[in-house]
Image (cartoon, rainbow, N blue to C red):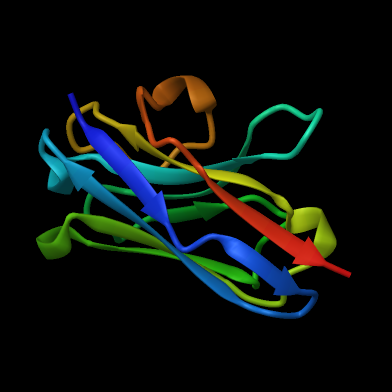
Amino acid sequence: QVKLVESGGGLVQTGGSLRLSCVASGGTFSRYAMAWFRQAPGKEREFVTGISWSGRRTAYADSVKGRFTISRDNAKITVYLEMNSLKPEDTAVYYCAADTRDLAIATMEIYNYDQWGQGTQVTVSS
């Protein structure tokens, strides 16, 4: 069982930046693909970005390309989400997720992710 704990959410103005962190415990973090999803009120949870176990492959939703950057530090068992040029439509609860299939690449499909954090709220004011 992998426990994921997100932090770094908050309230920011349009155009601002935030950095989310997700610390893992249990399991073998360095062998898992990791991702960030988000869920806005009344909407389905959606893929934001993912990173392969090695960090060499990443994937982004079109809506965040060029603004968000995912990275990981396997020594610190942490995955990060750097968010720049934030927009009101980025407002959501952001979830960290792990694909615990061994040495997985980053995928967009939510069903590949079997471990989830509790989420952290990001609110972008206009």
